[in-house]
Image 1 (cartoon, rainbow, N blue to C red):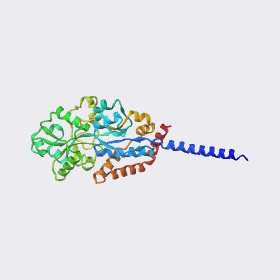
Image 2 (cartoon, one colour):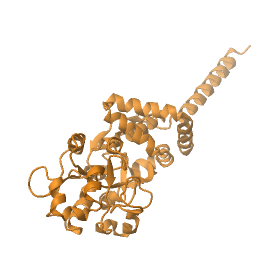
Image 3 (cartoon, rainbow, N blue to C red):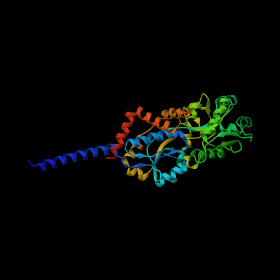
Image 4 (cartoon, rainbow, N blue to C red):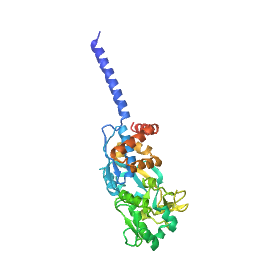
Length: 344
């Protein structure tokens, strides 16, 4: 009996088995050994979606660090330079203003929420109906300004966007376009803190005036059509980088608007991932996942409501993301299979 041949054959069979198992593992975990640097926005309503995408990348074997919280300008510069690999909170057309910053090193890839992100100006419904407030133009009237003037400067106080947010640029543009500089005072402090103060005033039966967007916890606490109403603007007027979208600022069927269709002054936004181009090219599985995945806006609303009710710790948000993934496991597994196929 040739023991050498038997041993050699057994060794070869073992090697083949090991190689086969390794190949299967590589197919299941195409991101094995690859570190991913993600970012999330300074508005916490986008942290849930960030964690879902990060967790899905981990299921593909990627080593994803906890996300870095960045304002828009810092993110778009960082992703173009490769210091950050991706985030899933690109708001377009609102973030068109950053295209010159990221277009030579990063790109839009996929769709988190399509045309579901509304933006605009609201007041409490009671005051709107009592004083017939329907438009930003009404804030040029002294009696209206006085209702919303908390600091006695003769202007209506409106909760606006903090510096560096994409919405800040549009609001500033609107102040000039609608000749509101002498009539409206923009409150640009922490948005959550400012809205908490507005809600406190609302609960004390005082008038409130604010900007918001969807998905956002504010429209869960202050429901359009029940607690507050969306106001109109006199005509569409957007910054130069969004001029071609002015026809899209009149939207039909907006719940809680003072009229239908509603001239909101803002086009509906797509929420989209933006990723470093080299990262996408080197990681086809990650690229395909970004292209395939999406999150229903109602699910984002529901999670944001949980955060507003006190489930807002880092552990809470991670748990919400994991629960969402398990609830939608069949859909998620389909995305993961597409991602694995792209890597082979």
